[in-house]
Structures are given as C-alpha cells and as structure tokens.
Image (tube, rainbow, N blue to C red; front, side, top):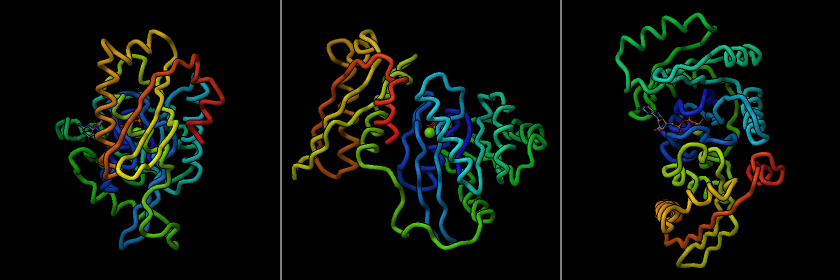
Length: 283
Ligand SMILES: Nc1nc2c(ncn2[C@@H]2O[C@H](COP(=O)(O)OP(=O)(O)OP(=O)(O)O)[C@@H](O)[C@H]2O)c(=O)[nH]1
Ligand SMILES: [Mg+2]
C-alpha cells in the first residue's frame, strides 16, 4: 500500500509510528522524502507492505521528475492508498484527486495532525471532503501522538487482498546501508538549513568502513553554489560542526558503536538536473 499526499503532511512520521522503528527520515522542511521507501509490517493478521513516497508536487528539475515518478510507480503497484492531508495547511486537492481517479485504487482519506486542531474543525473537514472522492474510509489520526494508529492498522488489513506473505517475517525494510546512513545525515542537516537549502542539498556517502571498534563514515554534502557552501559550513565552521555532531550521535545509535564521521561540503552546480547525481540518489 502507498502513503501519498503533499509534502510535510506526516507520511513518514506515520510509517515510523506504525513500524515502531525508524525507517524513513522526518523533518519540518519540504520534500524530505525523495524516493520510495519500502517497509514491511508482519503481524498475526498478515503482512502489510508500505511504500512511503515523496510529497506530490509539480516537478521543475530532473530530481523532482524522478520523485514524482516514484509517486506514480507506487500508485500503480499498490492495492490500497492512504491519502494524507494536514488541516492546518490545506492545499489544493484537485490535482491529487485526478491522480487518484486515474489510478482506480481503493483510497482512505487520512486527516493527520488532529492533535493541533479542535474536533469541530476535523468534523467540518470530513463533511466538506466526504464527497470529493469515493473514499473507502475517512480516518482522523495523529501520527505524532499515536491517535487512531491501531484502528488504522486494522482498517488497512480489512481492505488488503488475502495472500501469502511476500517477505520473511523478520524483514522490515528494503534500503541499502549507504542510502539509510545518508538519509540519517540528511535528517540532521535539515534541522539546520533553511530557505532553498533543503531543496539544494544532498548527501553522498563516499565510504563506510567497519574498523572493529569504530565505524568510519565519509560523506559529502552537495550544495549548488559557493554561497550555499558558506551557509552550510557556517561561521567558524559552526554549522557543519553541529550537523556532524548530531549525525554522529544518530549513527552511533544505529550501529551500536562508536562512529567517526568525516563530513565535507562539495559544490556541484545544477546537481538537481545531473543524471549522474540523480542516479546516485535513486540507485
Ligand atoms: N503536530 C503534529 N505534527 C506532525 C504529525 N505528524 C507529523 N508531524 C510533523 O510534520 C512534519 C513533517 O513530517 P514528515 O513525516 O516528514 O512529513 P512527510 O509527509 O513525510 O513529508 P515529505 O517527505 O516531505 O513528503 C514533521 O515536523 C513532523 O514532526 C502529527 O500527527 N501532529
Ligand atoms: Mg516523508
């Protein structure tokens, strides 16, 4: 099943909450998820295969075209779609509704972040949206606080087709170590960067080497210009130091041992249109 919606509506937060472990990075900056992330939840009732997707948007660069391709592919492959909205930031639905109509799949409308709003607002929204599309279910949730997540899981199982498990029960995600480590670093970086930088930065893992006592990780932060490099490095190297410290701590939790993280900033003009860089991201 596919998690769809605009950026920042809480798709990845929901996925992590349901999986009870981090499989996708989360941030309050736009376009955090860049490619489809596959997660597998096995329980007594069966197995759910999730596709977490980039937020739906109009692509202006090759990077964004591939992000939208990930959305279309997930729509095509899924049996069930959860369409997420955030009431605090209502966005135009017409484009998404037309995508859903074309896909011809079963869809739930998921109203997320209800912890931020009063019940009246949620009920008004349900009243307003209930006839926009033939939703199978309309479910108000809070991915952050965990409200209605158990209900969501039950409802998902109710609508998924019966079949054999696709993956072994102990497998919970499919993504390479390099990709996930790069994502963990990017998540920490996103805490620090603003304006256009969430869009114009990327992480390239150059090397990961387990040296027994420590894991050595060398990574590059791609930026598009000299000015952006200056911002990411910060005054007296302060910003990159903070990013590095936070990322190292997260990586140490992930590996369960000491990590030595070497972070560099590299200017790659126009990388969002570079086939080579995009291939690195989507490989
Ligand atoms: N208050 C509140 N905040 C939430 C909730 N769910 C997610 N958030 C916040 O919303 C922001 C975006 O969350 P993400 O999970 O990264 O959103 P996303 O839909 O995956 O975004 P993209 O990957 O960019 O498409 C983060 O700051 C989350 O902490 C919720 O239920 N309540
Ligand atoms: Mg996401």
